[in-house]
Amino acid sequence: MEELPDWTHRREHIELRAKRKGAAEKNIPVEWANEAYADPMAVDFIPDYTSKSGEGMRRIGWSDSAGFLISIITVRDVTGHLWGATAFRSNTYDQASYTEEES
Image (cartoon, helix red, strand yellow):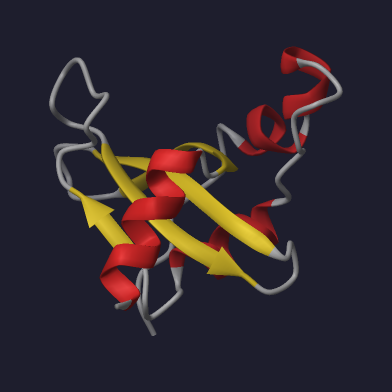
């Protein structure tokens, strides 16, 4: 089984997204994020195209439970541990990137 991100420090951040960003946003349960992360058709951007440090990684994957694509941002620390930073419903650019990879 593929390594999944550790959400220990960011679970609340993704699961309460709508509270922070507004009702138009979707809360992302960790289970949905992990399901999308494990999608065998997932698309990776390493580094994440919006990363300022160059250390963030973006994976776009499908979650059956959510019924939509989720973008997951992760970082690896110096020990190699994979941390979940954030997850959100994929924007149109990420959706197009995923669709192009399927073709």
